[in-house]
Length: 204
Image (tube, rainbow, N blue to C red; front, side, top):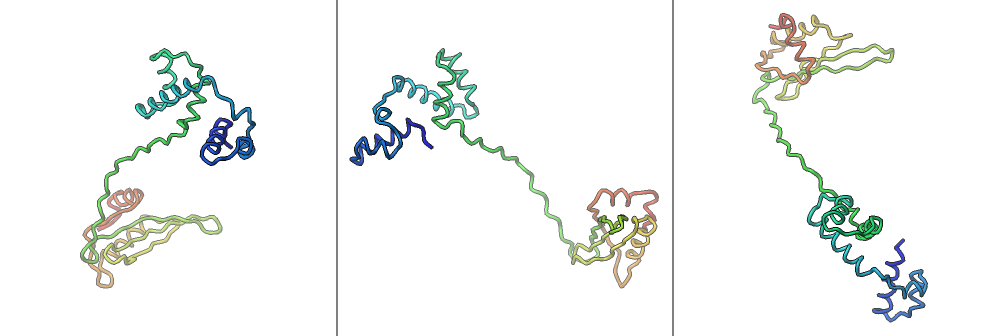
C-alpha cells in the first residue's frame, strides 16, 4: 500500500497526462480532493534533506542512518528532527540498500594425483556404525587408487590392532599376485594415529 503522498503524486500524473478528472483520479487512488490539493509547506526543504542523504550514502556506502544523521547534525550544523530525517531516509529506500558480500579468497586445492599403475597408492579409512542391539562396530576400508578396487574390508567390535595387522600382512605378502604398495594415504586421523602406533602395529 502506497503512502498518501505517493498516491497524490500518481493522481496528479493521471490528471496531467491522461486527461482524467480530479474527482475520478481521487476515487481511483483512494484519496480525498483535499489531499489532492494539499501542498506540504516544507516540500523544498524535504527535497534538500533527501538530496543530502542520497549524496552521503553514495559517498560513504558503509554509512547507515545513524552516521548520516550525526554528520548532518555535528558537521553541517543542521537542526532537523531525527524522526523527520529518518522518514525521508526511508522514503528514499536508503534503509533497503544491499550490503556487498565479502568474497573470501580461497586457495585452489591441489588435484589428487592418479597413480599410473595399480598397487602404487592405497587409501584407507575407518567407518563406524551400530547394530540393532546397540553394539558398535568399525570397518577398515582399503582401496587401490588406480582402479578403485576394494582390497580389504575388515570388520570387528571394534577393530583391534591384531586383526588390522593381519590384514596388512596379508595384503603386503602379495596375495593373488598383488605387489606391495609404495605409498599409503590415510583419510582419517584415527588411521594415522593407529598406523604410527607402538612398533608400527606389526606392519612390515
